[in-house]
Amino acid sequence: MVYEKKPWLKYYGSVPHEIDFPRKTMYETVVDAVAEYPDSIAYDFMGKTATYREFKEQIDRCADALASLGLKKGDRFTISMPTSPPGIICFYALNKLGAVASMIHPLSTETEIEFYLKISKSRFALTLDIFYDTFKRAADKAGLEKLIISKMQDYLPLPTRIAYWAAKGRKTPPVPASDKVIMWKDLVIKGKHPSAPAAKVDPDELAVILYSGGTTGTPKGIMLSNYNFVSQGIMCAQWVGMNRDYADMLAMLPIFHGFGLGVCVNAVLMNGGKVILVPLFEAEMAAKLMKKRPHYIIGVPTLFEALNKSERFNKADLSCLYACFCGADTLPKVVKDRFEAIVKRQGGNVKLLEGYGLTEAVTAIMAMPMNEYREGSIGIPFPNMMAKIVKRGTTEEAEPGEEGEICVSGPAVMLGYLDQPEETAKVLKVHDDGRLWLHTGDIGTMDEDGFFYFKLREKRMIKSSGMNVYPSQVEAQLYKHDAVAEACVIGVPDLDQVERVKAFVVLKPGIKPSPELEKELIAHCRKDLIKWSCPREIEFIDELPKTRVGKIAYKELEQREFERLKAEGKYYGEARG
Image 1 (tube, rainbow, N blue to C red):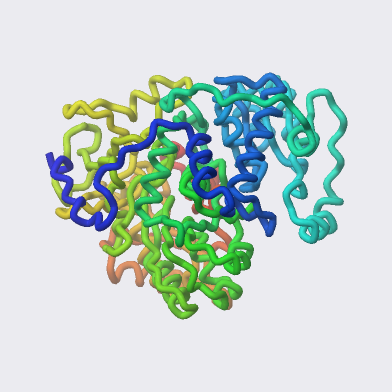
Image 2 (image 1 turned 180 degrees about the vertical axis):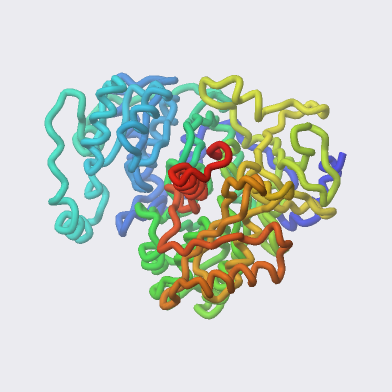
């Protein structure tokens, strides 16, 4: 078989081909880091720091408090927090006790929160005071036993705490007294509880529930084990060459997402690095925190484009950067080139490299090697991970260069979907080689050297006049035009073509939309793209909708078009899912 040849191995450099992962929990790997680096900084939150020794004390204190509430091994606990100390302290405390952390977005709606609490069967939950009203209503409907409320001020240094209170804190209504509501400060920071021992946990047991789904459809709970997270964290650290001199991460991705939790937080903390916690997914804050001199920035394309536009980032000292990786969506070359040019001008010398992953395998499981670049490639598999392209709808392996579905196998692959055995069976399949393979639903190719190329999720592929159109290719062409700041391409139902190609474009400041500019952009696409791949129409838009992790929400645009066409009586088909 093609993948068995592992043609990518010669590009590993100093990265080992195989790693012997410890059979430990995430809490135990952090304890190991504490023993080795007790006085090193574990996290920095807006100037408030904790050493590894202090971090472990905070985790143990939280575990003691949760155990005093009756939390035990196997119980489910929902964390609905920004990237902040209470969120990660509670996460590792749950792991120590053998409880399961269900991670959700703190801006979830009441209906969403109720759904997540019920599907996870959570007994307890943690959120911020500013989300109390919405969360409490959902918690009551879901039958939650206790709701723990933290305040942003709980871990801010005094000057920042005062500034936060003046700007936002004083506007937040006080949390009403209730026998079902407990303040984090009283329970964890001030409370005194009997010492709770670490639970005996099989590393392959369920430890974390993350959720799939974009802007439409019902999310699925993705079941992940300690072994999934530990193996993925070690592979990531090995890949970027994390060591004592280069181990500090600007953690600006949210902890309810595998990218933020698995790569930006867990991979760093189990390897003795410093996590610079960024509570808001916001470019200006990230640019400001460059004064902390992080070695790694990991994000999504929209984040790097926002950094490119940030005046503060353009003036920052970027000589500290050791590696930068982009994932979760296709990286336009123009965004990559601009970022690298800014870094070089500001004293740095790093490339913005692409990677690939999905929540069903924690997150990142392949990336470009540090010393390699191939345009459009998402790289090669991490040590211990296998990847191949199979012909769509089969388990038959495709030849190099042949398009098909990306399948991955290895220690990071999920346990399955929560309470959905049929959905699990659709994506986790044992192939003829006897291995369990995850069918990602993503379309791509592999070249002769074993480098993979991501086209797009199969559902995003547009079928126009019987031809396959990949929105990412059209978007990349639009990004090359000097007038285009952002672009998103979708398929619109059409009687003659089944789907016609439509582009939504955000123009750069100072450029005004016009019919002439629309024609110019369509002609620009036709210079390099086959006719059926080119937009039939372009709609200029002030801002593209984004998902909660900063990806362009193309499904929202598809739904918007569906509703418009239906209202106009021009709809020819079914809404895309």
